[in-house]
Length: 235
Figure (tube, rainbow, N blue to C red):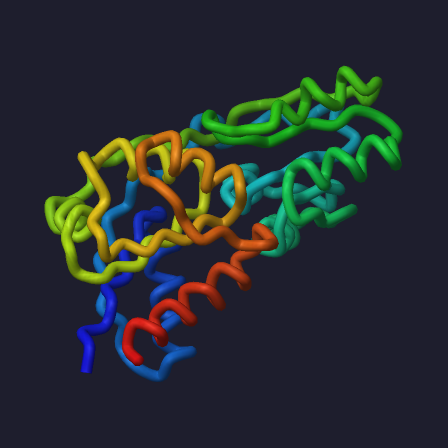
């Protein structure tokens, strides 16, 4: 019987631990995994000034969790987990889009009344506020958290560069760039799964090579693909 692949988790530790628990529950068995976060989420503005914003734009669950009590304020969001975090923070989800481009398409097709405020991390893509402003929709942005880089563990780097089978899910262009830049080369047994084409591009640009890419940038699809890869490696 072949040795099962090792799952390489580089998300912030709490997110990696949640994912690992869900995968083990779905498989009904322990998963051999290495956890080494490529970055940590650090609040930069724990009490953002929301005055003047008719509604918010929130593109990550971190943005909602670190914004404080939203007090019923409406928000346009990206992804199901972000929607859950907005509701947990006391906000109302006005529209949920699968990615930032789809959200921009919705907002330009259905311009809201009043000004929008994008709650974002220091490293973000899409220039959402700028593109909305250019389309005549008042929008500003505020950085409320940083995605601070962390050094990968020796064990993680060895697994990324080794010959044994390993599965590497990547959830953001930032993490893809950090992980790709931390290794000299990727091992022949590495199977990388990118959440979106933007993540896949960042991985290739960092020298990571080709990867499997989710059709929809959703955590549920990523989990299905990870489970399929784990099952295939054990077959």
